[in-house]
Image 1 (cartoon, rainbow, N blue to C red):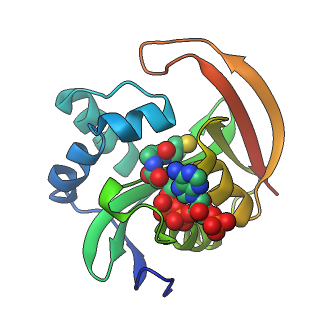
Image 2: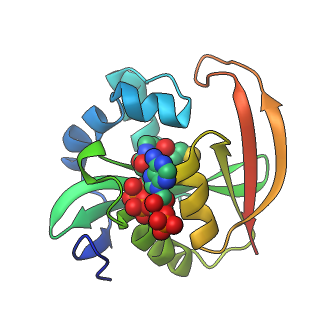
Image 3: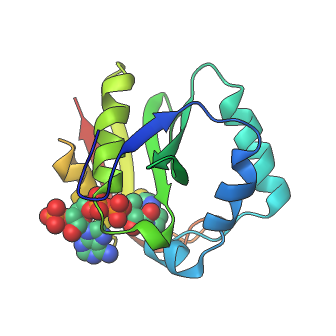
Length: 158
Ligand SMILES: CC(C)(COP(=O)(O)OP(=O)(O)OC[C@H]1O[C@@H](n2cnc3c(N)ncnc32)[C@H](O)[C@@H]1OP(=O)(O)O)[C@@H](O)C(=O)NCCC(=O)NCCS
């Protein structure tokens, strides 16, 4: 798929992707946007291995003109299939995630798909809406080891 940014592709992850994607997860600006506290390298690897080795999860590396620029994945939590995603800050605002999520929801036939985003994360909420997700709930989300306290919006794609 070619957006304003260039050619966006999803491919199956390989182990060496981890070294490129992990630093993206340490970006303080990205973490403030998504209201998460960064994982240690060890915790990140553990989750990466669990997700890539789990038949109920789908993980894809996002390429822009052949360069690794992010990742997108599904995972099952509380009997619901959720999606999560991340693009490196250098490539924000180019339409990459809109292209990537559009492709990903074609790949994942399972419905409904659920996504959570901080209400303040305007970019993520907009990406979800552009890909057909509908906001179904909003609630106060408390601080945890992984998440900052925020107003959280819940989206669903049927
Ligand atoms: C949120 C994120 C995925 C958006 O990815 P992206 O590739 O920059 O998004 P796109 O370029 O496809 O933009 C889609 C829409 O969102 C808007 N948008 C993107 N970032 C925005 C921002 N920071 N503020 C306001 N609008 C924004 C774009 O203008 C576009 O809307 P439009 O078509 O109406 O103009 C990216 O910023 C990111 O990875 N952030 C850090 C991690 C994160 O927040 N993950 C999601 C957790 S729920």
